[in-house]
Length: 314
Image 1 (cartoon, rainbow, N blue to C red):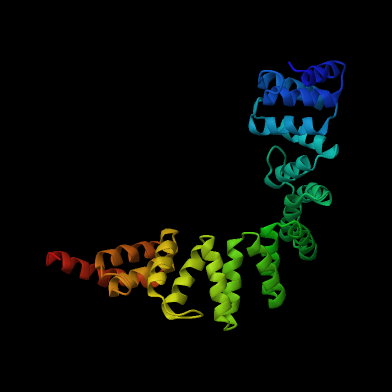
Image 2 (image 1 turned 90 degrees about the vertical axis):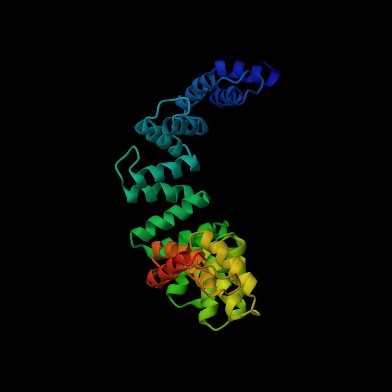
């Protein structure tokens, strides 16, 4: 035991809740003492029983996830509430999740919102986003927007995306673009496709192409597919069939039905690839399974061509 841990031990034995928690952390991490999860939990519990919010949160999570304690959701909720009342934003957020999902308590969105809002007021961006989501579900849309704006101000990409979508739904396209761009800059790939589609509808195909590329860099399947279409048709960019095939292939591998169909057409007609009826049929079948109607109509005639080729030994 090193000097620091020894000091924690002396203070913990005298009843200091902070020292008890710090000693628990030492046993949990093996700092100054051998790692001992059971001893760590014993000290966390002693600190929690004295009202140490961080220790209360650890005990709550332990009951919630079964880390050193049995999974007892009701006990987890009890300790989350204690920690939340002592100012733990993490506990407030988790308590909100419990009430939202009915996990260890009866589901109550109003109570969930209370705890999310409490953590959100203390700056927790996940709680701010959750508060916005609950407000939306409750039809309190103006309040929801305020929470989403607060979360977005703290670089919450999904909050920025939702704000973009709300402005787009109200035909406030300049504001929608600003929020989508912020979401995209925070790595939200769906913002890229929405932004690109907005520019396409406005006949600004070069900007649309730029955002399709941004989304493609994030492996966004729809962006990859539409980037392929743009390259194939020369829309916003010079025609580049090889790149179109590459984009279709990547999007198809990600499960995009339109890309699977488009790539099937390329194999059926020999556009940018060697003609391959078998590959075309397989792609149409996969696209059809993903709900693509034109692919379903292609299946029978292409299957007949495939059978004739096989019969001819081709």
